[in-house]
Image 1 (cartoon, helix red, strand yellow):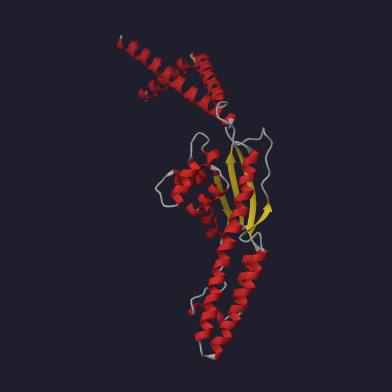
Image 2: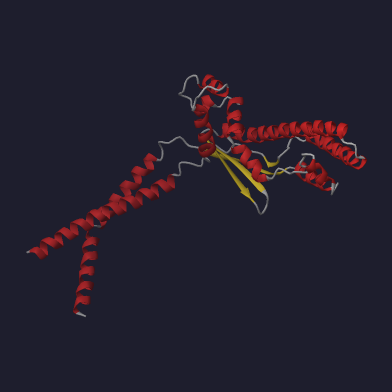
Length: 293
């Protein structure tokens, strides 16, 4: 009981001594917050620009056409075709994040001198890399763009895809966000048309060697559907993702980072914690000296 009372008295005296240094604690915290606030003015502001997307109608139509001829899809699989194989959103996101697509996007739009303004001859190095010469510059650019510049959010509930670009110039970020979607749709559209052309050529070859009339009729029907899919693909600019809300540049004062308020709060907390430890150390030393005597 006596020990508990002594502990309470010691704790009371400790906070009483701590309160004596309240001005120093407050001034140290304010000074630290002020310093962090000044530091937050040093980095170049960055803007987050987003475009909102949803899976295109083409994917839905292909899925419906794939199921419209029911059992013939099994015949298509037997001859080496994947009828009505819909590219889902996850695969589309993987494509836009892939090294092949992003590196092609960076080169086609000559972004290297913007991503790395202080480097020399990077375009020549990248072209050399594509020809087989070993160079890590393109890989580094892909990694930087994928992690520091571009972010993708997919809401599985609403089936909405949001692509965001974080950059120093809101107009440049807007251009990149919209161009990314256009390039992705064109890239996947070209890939699909190439696939359909190979399938049609394959079906035409099979028609020559197949003797069964039933199989020939099925292959002809599949060929018609593949041709219809090709015609649909040619007419769809929003091939994989349809734009709901294109990217727009934000006002120059509406930047995402740095967050000055968070810097100031962080500085205040650090200043308070640091000065508190310093004061506690002084109080403990004074108590040790007192008890030592």
